[in-house]
Image (cartoon, rainbow, N blue to C red):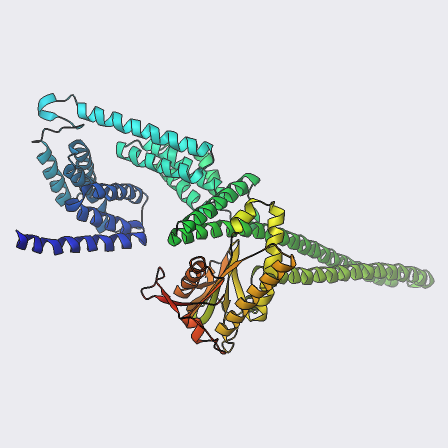
Length: 624
């Protein structure tokens, strides 16, 4: 027995490792590749944990129903068998769990799909599994064949139980929607769709998918809203259902505007909803941070930052669209003025030609009337001179309009540069405006600083929004100046703090020395201003770490951001958070200390700390 267990245990461990590898790969997969991984994971769990296998089997059948539609064209012939295979795996899992009626339904579905694609091997396998069910007396909520014949009592019990669950989930979804908790409502509607898909109620699935699309539109996630509306449209076309088809097409048209001028600004209700969601993420992040769950805290801060950036982007896009319309109107006015001038010149030229011909005819026919002709010619020249003088005046006006338009363009260019300098640091702004290729990512050795204002949340809860903004402006104004003086770049503000990088603008600048001196000067300046009463009493937390990062302009042709990524950035953020544990204001890593031009005298040893995301411990030194 001991030998048998010794042989089996490594096999079980190996199977668990294989499942974990497949689950990790599942997070980065999409479409057919994701369906293959779901089927593999289901097969792995079939022998060890059918309950977990049921979860992945249901995901596989739902994904397969979405992929293998009549209009799908990007499929290879060999991939069609994945659809019936998903239902076959679902039947095997239900059979292993003793849910024989559910297994029978899944096997029937698998055989129907296999017959559609004429896969003889899968047809035989489905028939084999169905025949094995004929000899079983099913109990506990399934069909009891030999005892109750065709009464299907188990099926009715199961349907009633599922209907009660479904009604409860839908009620939860509607309550969450009425309270404007749209993300929670979406989650409940998706659970309802999963149950309805198993029941084959395609009309209800389409209805709740449309409701999910509408909710995504309310929270401003246009991409997911567009995906769900397209899914609803495909299902309605498959079912030849024209109910509400025009409204869905209008929603798709609004979500896919052809040019920026046709974008509809967010309503006040949408902005308020996104602001509430952003605040909720911030509170969740702070709660996770208090619970020492840094991973969740960073995830929620990331969601908070994304929503905050989206609000800023929407406002910036609206302003840019307004300037673009103003420019187009000015340009059109200029073109109209030029066309009028050209028409006037052409009319004047034609008048000259006609007059000359007329004068020639008069001269030939009325040679004897020379004096009269001379008088008429004199009068004509006089009026011609007046006409030319008027045309010249109009040309001068047109030139003045052109000059005024040019001055407006120069002023607009100046405003754009000023706005760009406000959004990013001056060095990055100059690099972007110079036309250099910032899309090419590159590796750089830099020193990263994370700064956080301690106890900002209780401070903000007791004050009005205007007072909070004034406090942030007072604190960040001198900090920004200090960062710029030490050749640093502020990458992004994080509400009550920011991230700055040293060493991006010039490879010859001592990045660690500059970052260290800037951090000390910020702490000293903050203490002085607190003592003077210029700002309320303020404590900071600063973390410094140095290493290689990847620098580049990340995004699409519509929206890009100058981004710095890498393990160095994450480690610097972790070090800043450790100030709470060390009860300090400035922590630096060994990597920063070794790069200082003027080594500082220390009376304490470095402390080794295990930081999440790194295998080796980080050596930290408390400065202040």
